[in-house]
Length: 339
Image (cartoon, rainbow, N blue to C red; front, side, top):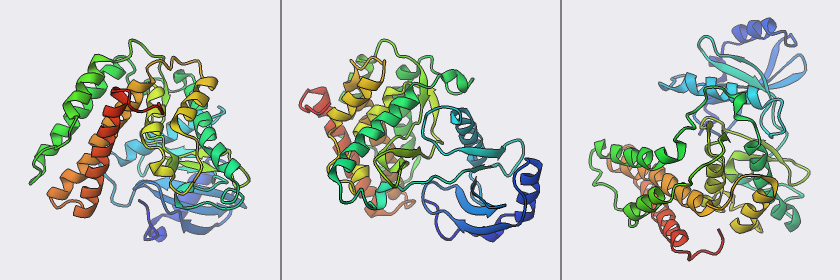
């Protein structure tokens, strides 16, 4: 997570101002620089220039190996979505041809529900219920975007077939962490085998967010509308129904501050009413999301054994992994009527 420990003074404001001048943006002194808390490891800073507010997003001062490439991808996605109906932060300009890679976007007029609700949302159960449906509607809007807006992005050919081996390989890689005894996940092999045997025969490629859950949404202050889908660093061209599966798999754990949300079955039905996609294999997408997310979370459990993550966090996430695989088994066996 980003934090208030961001050293805003480490950003070269003179360089930034000169670059903005070259982009033809409003001039004047850069004022009111304040860190934006939340999101990923990337740095976000809000400021104003020439009476216009901006959000600057750039890699951390000690960039990871892929930090610049992640920002390049994000800026490219936001540029492609700028002229669509998808609610996303609006890109202003980006520096991607040299380091540091960064981009400017317009601030989103909205709030993130993962930390609590303002009014009128807190007092109005109808608004809260509608927030869930609006999440599904925003995802359906993304699924309608022509993937041709992002040429060369992702490898849709064989995308679904690659998922199980891709994530089993990720799980195997945890063996390199000292002290990790290996995955103790009941149902792991059975789930992998079922997914492999039931891969949907075909799908229509589309733009995927890659981490679509309630905590990655911002909502309008005056109602249930999604103001923006945020954190696009996992975006690719693949099967958008995996995003819907991800939303179902994480529901409602990322929306605990929002009582009265619709059940997953209602989310799926609402998405289906807005989409021309074949929903007949929705169970597969929900199980795949449980499988993938469970393996991702098991990574923190493995790192805890190696002293690279707190033990209590590792234990908690391992318990979440077990719950996800149990849920996957229940979906496979037809014991859940919510999908």
